[in-house]
Length: 390
Image (cartoon, rainbow, N blue to C red; front, side):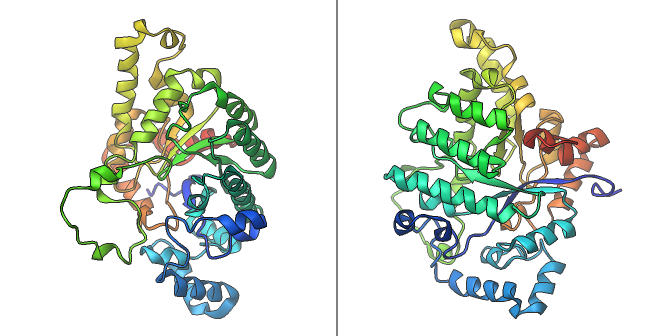
């Protein structure tokens, strides 16, 4: 029997696809005038005609294409075609896409908007960008309670970040995406952030890391002294490089180690953490290493002695992870237990593949996943992560 039959399925990773002028329409004049082009400029030549065509289609200009996209929601996922996807930026279409896929809810991240302000040296622009993006994401999701908006928070100034968190909660943001690198010389577990975690814990708003949260391979590791042929990348919007794939989790693993070892998850036992689109192959080893760090060195560290749980137990209680559809999810499940992994499509990004349902199903069936384990993967772990009622 298909895993999709008679089962509630939640999607822990999906995206809004930004188009030209979208973020600007929510920003103040000052912020609008100072937004950066972003990692993928919206005037990137191959994108311009696609955005124009997609807007015309949504306005009713190409009903045949609309029906074609609806009939093959997951099969269209070429790199640039995500701008043409059904429901890419139209909320009514996105709601219909959930109906077609049989999803009970979907966590919706922005795509490239945060890169236009998150690292801006002018904090008025950085925090003004957070405000604009968060209101924009809530607006996209507001008409369908199944669409759960993910906002963004810059941690450069803890007091201003706290205000972003409060405003995001009030606006209706359901999860906040943050960076995973240390900021301004502060560890991710610095006590200056405790008021932020307290606000999010009380509101039931999850903290998420996502691909792009931390630095991957830096420039020095790309410098081999050999001239490279870059012609293949000229029309490719993918910003993840081959060398990055093996290390995208490093920053997240450092971040989570600090959050556990320095007692943040001890102090905030109901704060939920999502590690999204960072893969999960590395998680079994992380769980072992976290516990080993305490068992080998805990007697020399006063803070570690104050932990009431094993580090791996904090992960099982509070951390949820999305495997990539290309990974051996069944193997990962057998090495992390049932409480951690969550189903995801990455819709409409191409990284989610053209058959995420089938890819995950085949991998889980290969290890004989039980109905209880499947219920956790597709349903219960997401509901715990997002504070949803069963």
